[in-house]
Every structure is written in structure tokens, then in C-alpha cells.
Image (cartoon, rainbow, N blue to C red; front, side, top):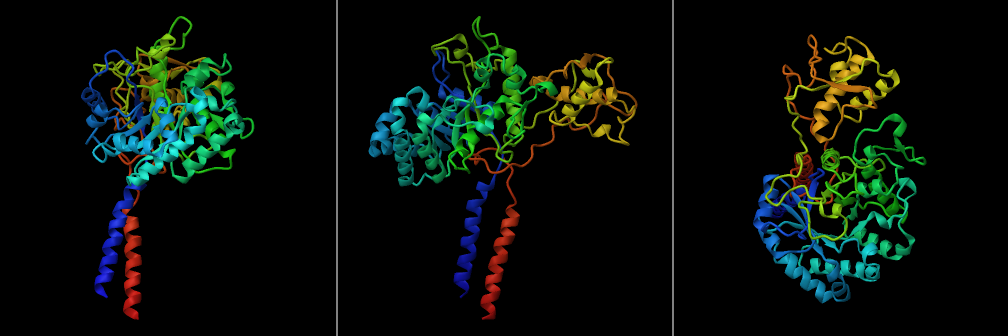
Length: 503
């Protein structure tokens, strides 16, 4: 009687250890790695750049053997891709799909941490004649993964552009183009049945440029919006602080229109070009820097869009390097964040815990003397709310409560926001109510952020623990209550032993 019980105990503990990593949580920001450039670094050098900047997730537009070999033993999570040219063969033959998986996936795992296969790129909108074989391709690849016992580790999905949703705003009424209803329904059923996720290519840059001035550029760049410019869904009254969130929500609502739920959305491409032609005036270094830094901060807070606040938005930035061989307008060749030598095109922080540097420039952000009181109140509310400024010092009894005036409180909040966010595109404007000064506004025991006498850790509060992401086993994440599970398991075992002894 003792041996079976001990076997049961050890078996349970093993199962517990196996399942616990899947409870890890935390949103990630990864990078797309295109290869259409003249001076592509070697695979080894590309991986060195990834490691130097602690990039934990990458998406390849193919399944290049050199890259997959170089990524071995790094822990970096890798999404490999079936090219659009390969889909036709795979979608017509299970044996071709099996051969593709054996050659491009099974041959490299577990040393290379492959976690997803992206089937094609925007197939429905770029090669619509292949729509009929898209889902069969996914099914054949999934069966090949099952045969290789890799289906639990590797998910299959297919990236689609926002163009499959003709009218994405307001998000509450968004729906997929009915032309592809049959294919999309089958695709969603596949994702649901395999516990996979919807891959979305979402570009606020194009959403803004093509809106003909309907939406303000601040909305596309994650910048704060004044009260008169707030974007609200008239049906749900949900507020959208960014076009990015609205695009993700439009996708969730389009999925829900098929009465399907439980499929997370992962943004497989987004970004902003830093150089464009004469007619591409919004493709600038400043806008690209603002967008991508604000995007990283947005994703890293582990929250979802307004309609799905508990589902983090895992995201891949487009892209690691400029691809100078790509056709089209100048902007098409200037999305990269890194030069091939590993230097950055513009300053960017890839960490979710961003250091707030001391104010070495001696610039502070304060409220204007003659600012409109209503605008000041709106600015104060934003800074202490969505802007995530630390306004605890303004509470009753705290060092910056007096003088108890709107201008004084707004100055403190504005500055705290500005010092934390100016390197990520945050401005000292607040609807025209703020200005910069080189004079330290600190007084008495009230020390403004950035003051040479300011104390503290200089860190943003850590991001809140979020729910399980679709793919996060290799990222730096927070692990949920292993002790709790162990206690529950041992309690069950003890109860079983107690019952057995009483018989």
C-alpha cells in the first residue's frame, strides 16, 4: 500500500513542476527581422545585437537555417514563417507540410526555442486566390507538429492586416470583410481548437495617414489627448487613448461577431517609419522615436485594450533593420530601429522597467501662470491618472499639498510626468497650459522630480501582474504562486492518506 501512495505523490509533484511554468505571465515586445537589405549582418552578429539589447522574442519572415542555428541556446522565443510562396504546396499536401516541419522546426528544437509558425503574411489581402488553401495549410502543419510531439510547444496561426476589417472604427461595430467569412470562420475555429492566437498586423501610421485628418496625430503616437479631442466609442462609451488599442479592440469585436471568444490577439507587426519622401511628412525620426518608445511602455503595463483589459497585447515591432531592397515609397525602406552595426537609429528603451534619469539638463515642466483653470484641471487629472505621474506628494498632509492651488498642484504633476516620459515622446504641453523652465521649482520639503536633491529609487512602479500570455515561456516573467499549488496538492494527498488509514 505504501509504494503506490509514494508513486502517486512523486507523480503529482512531477506534474506540478511541469505545469507551473505555464502560469508565468507578462506581456512582451519582440522584433521582426527582415532580410531584404544589402548589408545584412551575419546570423551570429544579429543574435549578438538581440542579446546586447535583451530582446527576448523575434519573428522571422522565413525559416532561415543560419538564423535558427545562431539562435540556439539563447532562450529567445522564435516565430518562424511559411512564406506566401510555400503555402500552395503545403496546402495541397500533408506530406509537404510534414517535410517542412521536419526540416525547419523539428531539426532545431529544443536547442532553438521555436514557439510559433506564422503561415504566410497577410494572405487574404495580398494573395486572395490562396484563401481556399490557407486553413488546410494550417491544419496540415498542425498535424505534422502533433506527429512530432511539438504541438503543445508550438502554435500555428496566420498574420492578417487591418484591411480584413473594412470599418475598424468604432471598434464596437467592427466586422471582418464578409467576402472571406467562410475562410475566417474556419481559421478562428482552428485557433480556438488548438489554443492558438490571432496574429494581427496593426499600423497606426497608415491608419493616421489614410484618415485624412479625422484623427489627431497624438492619437496615433500614444500621446495624451485633450478633453475636446478624446476618442470615444459612441456605442460602448469606452475611451481610446491610442489608435493601437482601437485597432486591437476592432479585431476582438470582429472575432466576437462570429460568436467565438477566448482567442487572444497578438500584434505581429507594428511600427513607424523614420524617413519618407516629400509626400510622407509624418515619416520622421521624432515620430518614430515617440511611437516606438510609447508603444513599449504601453505594452509593458500588461493591460489589454478597453474591451479586454485583462489580456496583455504581446507585440512585435516592425522592424530590426531597414530593408533598403524593398520596393515602393521611401518610407517602406526605413522602418528599422537598428543599423547593421548594432547602433540605434534613435534612442529607444527596450526595458519594461524604465530608469528615470536625473534631470541632467536642468529642465523642469511647470504650469503657466495665466493658464485656463479648466484646462489646468484636465491636465492635472490626466497627469495623475492615465499619465501615471506619482502624485502622492500632493495629498493632504504630504510635503507638496501646500500651497493648495490648482497651479501649484498641476506644476508638480506635470513635471513628474515630463521627467519620466520626455525621453519617450512625452511633451510639456498639456493643451497649452505648461511650459519648461531651467529654475528648480522645488520649495521647502517639496522636491520636484529631477531636482538634484530629489531622493528615491528613480524607477517606475513595476508593471502589474497580468494574465497568461499566449507565448511567454522564455521571457522574464512573474511566476504565480507555486507554493499555493503545492499546498493544495499536498493537502489532497494527505487527505487521501488519511482516508486510507481509517479504512
